[in-house]
Amino acid sequence: MPDQPLDLPLEKTPRHVAIIMDGNGRWAISRGLPRLAGHKAGTENLRRIIRASVEFGVKYLTIYAFSTENWGRPPEEVDGLMHILEDVIDRELAELDKEGVQLRHIGRLERLAPTLQEKVLDAIDATRNNNRLILNVAFNYGGRDEIVQAIQHMMKDGVQPEKVTDEMVSQYMYTAGVPDPDLIIRTSGELRVSNFLIWQAAYSEWYITPTFWPDFNKEEYRHALQVYAQRNRRYGGISNVVANKSNG
Ligand code: FPP
Image 1 (cartoon, rainbow, N blue to C red):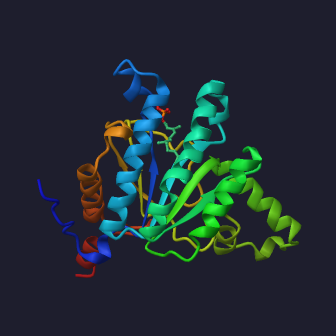
Image 2 (cartoon, rainbow, N blue to C red):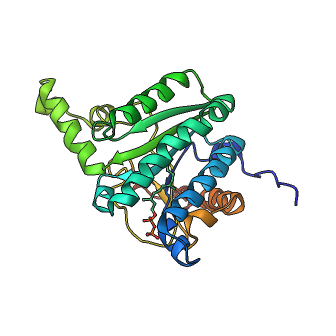
């Protein structure tokens, strides 16, 4: 079937999409496979969704690949996820670079093996001039940890309490300079924030689907963007329709 064009008015395409790629484990178990096979299938899917993001004109994509809480998983699964990150960089970097993807990392690098840290930093450096899509990889990331670090940095910088503003706090986050996510997608039907972008998600729209991440394909992604385009974002105010009616 030929790809259908994404038929959205441009101003309605989310600039920043963030994804909680959940359900890899259940996807694998439901097929009688080990959990890591689910993460591998999830990685294949990620490649498709990155490509679709470029095609759909999404400018920022943030993916939750490993949380600060994921260290509590069995060691072979933690190791497997570390290897996946390494493999993705080894195998995909040239292609991502060719597609104009700029890689960034959010989270703490310091608990990763030194060779992996170096690999991540090199990949960030190699793609720093690309601007078709900014891909933020949340790896060893926790939203509360990010906020704690931001407060620590502000205090170290000697910021006076009365000078602290919403904008300033944003500048101390890993995502400084990146617009807040317009749309957050969570696969596998869980109704939780899971410590993901808790500062930045204040006014994000959510799309939650029962689909497990490895099965969340381009068509459903397109559907999620279309659902988003129908939303009336009010940021705590009232909708234009209501406002116009009450104006007479
Ligand atoms: C959640 O599913 C998924 C993760 C913790 C890992 C996500 C990682 C990938 C999709 C691989 C891509 C990774 C990189 C480094 C680019 P789950 O295991 O919690 O699923 P479950 O809830 O069904 O057990």
